[in-house]
Image 1 (tube, helix red, strand yellow):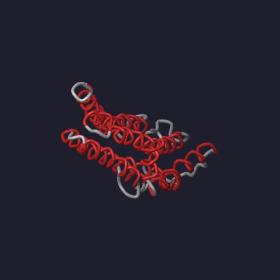
Image 2: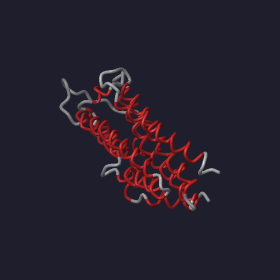
Image 3: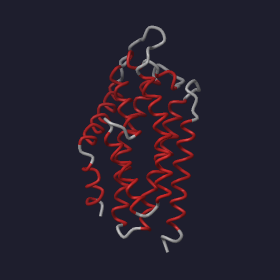
Image 4: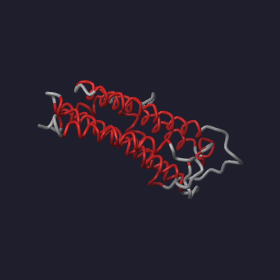
Length: 222
């Protein structure tokens, strides 16, 4: 049956994926070339592990529709803020070709809007206020594991959330540190400005009413 074979396999895959992704993101050196994009890429792998949790839980509960709905809701919420974070990274790469995490030091002094948006996106990914959307998504996925009796997987997820908190907060703090040298302001092209505005607005709206995504996933897809 699903619960006997695929359920445990998917649960193990979810645990492995989130752990590999978050540990690799944590190990990124701030001065290494392209470390900012590498961190976002590896954290995306970790987020994919969270996405697998409700799918694994579906075989252990009578309400498989709710479990799958939790995955869809998390994917929609995560996509909005992750695209925003990559949009800021693309904006910074226009002037900082190596796109190192260390290049983001003092970003607030150079581009306040980009810094505030990136801070918001990183807090969303970490699941901290004011990024309520990220907190809501993680609670939804965590609840799916607990309701399915996968306590061990919920513990693994909790440990990974703490690991991610460290590197997300470390990067966020760097945005507001005093810059090295005189900051130079660079205007953003219209497409990047539009992408930042769209993802930022979507993140704020969903943080104010995250239940909209869960309701859509539960009723609009089945």
